[in-house]
Length: 438
Length: 101
Image (cartoon, rainbow over all chains, first blue to last red; front, side):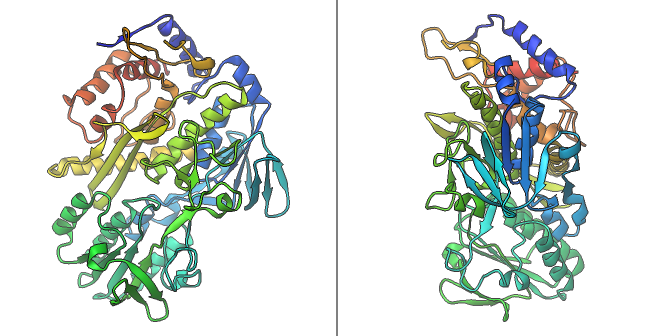
């Protein structure tokens, strides 16, 4: 039986929490006065305004309002990949998943610079922008997301940037989402939608399968003679049992699954002919094709020496500081944080942990030891969603999933539980985007 | 045994003392609470069907989290998550959340 010593614990807690409460906002972490002073005079530059970066920027400002925080983001607004499948399915419009940076600027005092970063120099401690402007930093947090690999980079033969128009990836949300949706709307009843799913590791493990679900729902209601073909480079996928059981129930006979052992790996595409060729030479013709190719860390990370040969960024798990470039943290999809999945939930969590670590390190103090969680919700049909969850800690220097915790939604749950998960998924989307951009 | 706060970086740390055995690493409760905001709202005020966390009594929060952890209370995801947290972390979270106005 563990004993918890409470030497002054209750008092300390109350004292600290009272300070947090008077701010009438949830401060994610508090620091000693010395740490707060050291951090107040610092400048932290965040590169990438998504689930990792926007979260980190705001978390820094919450903790130390006087700190100078600059957020470099190339787009004027942020369109979330999470819930973009709902736009593809016709359940939502794109504006409902589009978020402004206004509150980060006006309410939180973050300098949001709309620009592409051209380079990050860890020694000089500068971020150079594509206009030539240079930003000096005391510490940096980089959350650049992913890039799709092109042919010659480990991508798929024939799937170059020009091919993205005929065969959208829609693996970065925004115009690609609208493009794929328009193609689905234009497809005639009886047509075939083909989706090529990538090998591990990739952004959002359940993503392709939620996408199939939403598109299957659309087709089953509007174009019921249509078919869906999954060509997968993997031999299994996230929440596979739950997805396939639900597909059987809601979209029987509509979805054909070809995993890796069944010649599911796409090795070449011909966008003009709308053909996809798999490993053993079979050619599949698509009326609408969604190709999700192999991926790697966003370009800025790779060009700044933050990525290893694998194309992903190694980090120290407690602080997410780059193992290759001291003073620079990398969070989100670009980082190697396995077994944490490459999800928005993970990136949000990691952004907060990295922000906390930054403040501690700026003061020359030891960073706190974090724990993280992930919950990935997938909508399968209206009022029916499934999830996978986990809790993570650093154990013996490695990111580890806590044994006995986490897991999948039950295989035998009733419709009421599936409906609750769908409602909770909506609550998650509202909460996380409010936490990032509100 | 470690001090109450490692380098005072996290003023609200936990201390686990196991007689004679190695103490576990303290975890910053405020970073834990930050994770909750992903579903429970930026200010833990709730979002749609996801309930509010702030302003409940520590007793209620502790009881609820322990009930999720033990599996006594029916849940969709909270049981899976609560099992990942130590009793002392649940205690700290309950106290911390109850202090929010």
